Amino acid sequence: MESSGEPVLYHLSDQEPKLRIRLITDASGSVERMSYAVDDGDERVFSGSEISSVATPESLRATVVLEAGTPTSSEVSFEVIVPVVMLGPEPPDRGPFGIFAAGLRIQRFPTSGEPHPGPRQAFEAVVLTGRAIAHDPADDDAPATD
Image 1 (cartoon, helix red, strand yellow):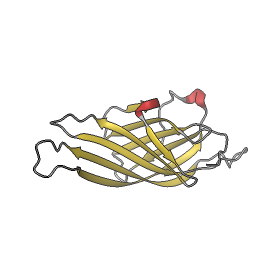
Image 2: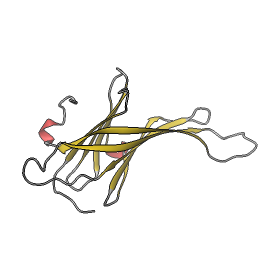
Image 3: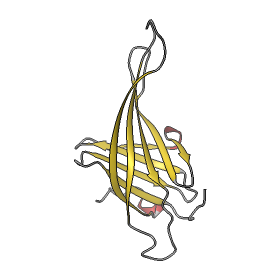
């Protein structure tokens, strides 16, 4: 994956907007931090090993576990797929750039004791819109602004 050498901050929301996602990638394009909030609820912040990510030259996919599963309860995870944004050295090439992204909420149900073991899952897909902009690491704790 080509790198712009700059961290990128993505602000995303659904149409309502009741779902808010904030994603920070480092200079190499790896997902460094992700926050997730629904409605007026508290923002949940994920970082490091809590985020599983895959990058291609065109997109980044980040996955976090929202609810850990047990043998008797389901696991809920959330994936967000965003386009790779390449930044230039000067404004306006540093953003903000309008983007479309996809979100996927996945619920995995326990299958122990089932007559037909195997994965049982429910999916909810959501279209996200937002913006990507050059990120200053000194602003890591700044509140999201839309």
